[in-house]
Length: 218
Image (tube, rainbow, N blue to C red):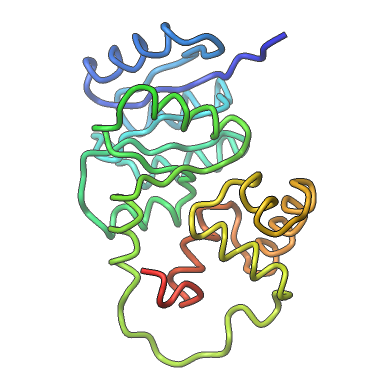
């Protein structure tokens, strides 16, 4: 029996919410359990319904998208927060990821790509649109003072997994490229995230780029 992925749609434009609802009605396995038109309401609805996935606009009235992201993460820790945005503000994007957003897509994303991203979110995988990833990367490429190796605690295998994750690899692709099982990939990811003191895959990717692990891969 196919499971249903529950969603909260948070956007201050009613036409956007209706468009997302219409898209999801055409695909099996999705149910919009709540909507919100400002940041405070988004946090309240997440606390009430604990949806599998939250589709969140960053540019909302009230407390705003970044604060809403932080509030949703606290109110419903199991919910996957997917930001849908028309903003090109790099600092805002990075702030949202630091606050707990796990996927990032522009509002111009085509319907099937959005559905696929939601399916990935439902099983714990993140999606960063290339244009969003580039803007986040740009915000990280600033001179930094020399510091101790931030990856010193990671094993060589954990570094291999992190590099492939930062290149956009799914669990299946990472497993295939390293000739290990997906279960082993998940174990390595859990270990490396604990060592890096990050809470999810998206923050691990951001950390890898920001701290120079992917230098030369731009």
